[in-house]
Image 1 (cartoon, rainbow, N blue to C red):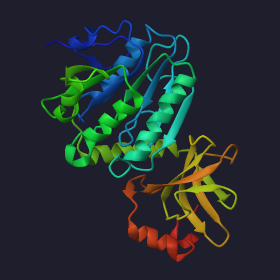
Image 2 (image 1 turned 90 degrees about the vertical axis):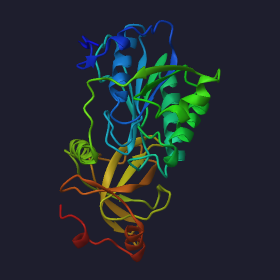
Image 3 (image 1 turned 90 degrees about the horizontal axis):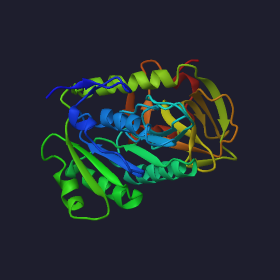
Length: 317
């Protein structure tokens, strides 16, 4: 099978992608698949094809571990600007903070976040929204339950399933016999280059480095701010500054925290607290020297509960 170069996105496009009839499609188009199947590449290709059919096209990067439109731990909605044909879209961006690199243990925040982004896309006038999901598909990890819950909640017009073999059967089996969505199954892209855990970790580090490239320390008093789920800050912990609707305005890395003064010092690209309604504490830490991430554990929580994180235990900035 011969692949051809797409004229609208710089990827190798299999002929069976080009043969898809997208006329008349609207609403939410959900793309699922395991890692290293070309899932995200297909989602971007699908977006570019739809730009020829719709004026208001939205793309949701829902892959919190291997994000393409924002820092890891977040999901990002972007709208096409008038006349654009390429990817990524250059229009307004809206972001939610899940606070983790995987939906495992964070199923509810993942569902709520993607629902909020889909609803916001509709409010902004999008007639079609492409949703790229995470590669979590294993039954032992709750993948089928999460994907089926997204179908129930978002009511996608089509689920595009990118598969290598039978790995998606726990998800697709019930959907094939249901009228709640249409399922389009496609084989994995032949030109995909697999990435191991080391490569994925390095990818996240590059994204964090890019996001925090122009970051500076900003001290925040949380005395008059909501803090979700609680004001328990650990060194290098990721924190989101959210507006009143729960959308992330910016992320920050904890450098210091003083429970007595109710202040936290964040390394963040945000320059002010304009429109900040709340702080949301994540379950991931990011080292601002290497930009590598780690999962916060109970030892980190106990350190935070023990009292102030002083400047010697944080980075010197």
